[in-house]
Image (tube, rainbow, N blue to C red; front, top):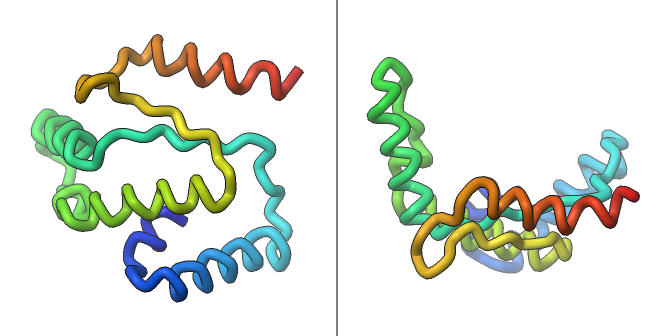
Length: 119
């Protein structure tokens, strides 16, 4: 939802698309609706830099068109936040003062949210 909605700048059209996609997936295709849906947020510029760093380490892989497009990364990030708000998804901020939190720290927050809901 986030990447596709990020390509739709008009909010009325974005809402139409999201409603259509939700209906398609869960009503027509009968895909089970997730019980828990988390949004792990990282600032788009930091996310892009991390992706490009990984790309440099894996030179044999082709470049990801979306990760190379800074504007798309910003638009997608804003759309993911929009979708998270619209569908009341739990947002976990993966940065602390512009520094990426440790995997363990993020995982601890994820688990502290998920475990009580699955028990």
